[in-house]
Length: 296
Length: 294
Image (cartoon, rainbow over all chains, first blue to last red; front, side, top):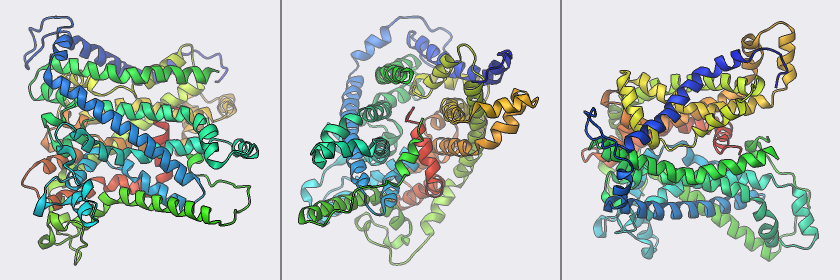
């Protein structure tokens, strides 16, 4: 920091455009959204909305569609976060152990990060084509050709468990990124630490289990928070693969439809607040933990 | 703070001697390379299908032969996809270029102030700014659409630019603040001694050495604005649709054949893929700063 006796007004003036914009667009709008969620605002002519307290919040808890959303979000999040973490860590370990052409593999695994969920969805909906018999195509056809018939499935059109199909392209998109996070963590561990463990007679597997894994915990925590953040608001990927289907409904799609198709602003705002709360449950403890560590 | 991306891309220095190739080690290596090859296939499969399908002549297009190579290279699919997507690709560029530049410039100013000109409470302000990175945008969507509508920017590209600039500010501020933290204070102090003020110092000293941070910031903004769907779908009308919305629209329709959709998918992602291929290092750096402190 510059030790100058200058007045601070210029500093504040310089950042004030950004601060005003963020104040309005982030904090102001969150407030307005909560405000709408506490009313019965419906339709485009909203001059006569009444304050009704938490009625919308309570009503949603009895809404069968919201129950489907919660079930789908849990199925999707657990699968997506679990597999992506495991795959990310596995790929990082594979790549970290001195291989030639490391840069090539890294680039290939990270490539999906450059494309949008919409593009991913548009392509994967054809790969996950559930047609059977003569019309079999996509990955099912590939499984058939390689004699892996037991893998042939209905993907996102599987009854009840369709979200498992949606998780496949999401995993494809995010596991390279998770690999990069773990790779940074692995390479941040000094070689001496591993060397010392080796001296003590630990084998490679033991070093990973006892020395490296515990040191990767902070990275794993970041990864979980980032992936949870993505999965709780998943939207464009499902839209691009399947459009709006009740079987693959999630809170973000319900919110979008009820708000912008049905003009039920109050319910849309309530759903939005539920999404915000679910994300905050992950993010706020994370921010507190990271901040505390910074100060030490 | 260590540059995380340097950790990822650095070549490791190994002190140990090369181990002899025992059968056990040979087995391990075989497994390792098989896994690497398997995952390369997993990540490349969609890209293979897109390329192969988009280059086939129309008579070879069939879902049942989607894995087969084309007999000749034919660009008809691209012509058809281009006809459908050209206006929206134009919109995307009109959106992304000013959006990325404005967000990066404002982020640079914020980063300069919050690193070199801190004032009482500036750390709290930084934390409050960062919070904007973590909100699910659904939580602000309804008031956002209402406000953009009221100020007459609904359905316009400037309206969407404004929105992307605002929600890009937290990460841009983070990237530039972290970058300027590593710039020695003496540099700024020397400029002040020479009689430059705070703003003149920014333009004479700080801005010229910010090029690496600008590349990272611009790439991040370019990619995230280009790939955005949510803001675009609620704030634009068909004539201002960016390419993500237009692509989703042709994918959802029964009239547009899947081969055209595949070519469209490639056209829609070509700009960001080219950035990734040619500026991958900076791309990675931006992604890592997206994970907060790395």
